Image 1 (cartoon, rainbow, N blue to C red):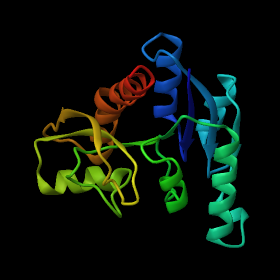
Image 2: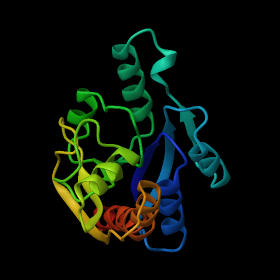
Image 3: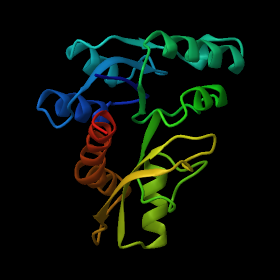
Amino acid sequence: MLRVLVMVSGGGTNLQAIIDATKDGRIRNAELVGVISNNRGAYALTRAEEAGIAHEVISPADYPSRDEFNRALLARTDSYKPDLIVLAGFLVVIPPEMAEKYDHRIINVHPSLIPSFCGTGYYGLKVHEAALARGVKVSGATVHYVDSGTDTGPIILQKAVEVLPGDTPEVLQRRIMEQAEWVILPQAINMIANS
């Protein structure tokens, strides 16, 4: 049974997609052992609580230095003994020590077709604003392994989503979540759990 730890910063819609896919059998041989958020107000924590999943907040604001936060995050991560760490909208840079320790055991979902609109500064609505400004006709989402770079690790799955006339960043973001992120993130976890 693959032990999955999910890290989130916001609403937790990708977390909910994972919870639902675990319940309905689209993710097999995996268990959600914990949820870590950097944000006390994250609705993802409510989702975890309602699903009976252990959850906690580890925020950089609670530590005198980034190094101390990084050590605490790694220690709390280790305490869950995860086989796989899923970054599902986690807006904190993973410490290099964590990326190294959990090499090929951390995955991230990014709301574009990497290598487009990715890397430092491309997160949340900024990704969709950039895609619309460039005039792309297709966008989508990517699940990839996390390495020491930003959105540079090996790609696991991608799914394209059509950009429609009149799309706003918010409308495009929602379509990509519904048609791509919520589909391929559970698929990737299932693939890893059953490979």
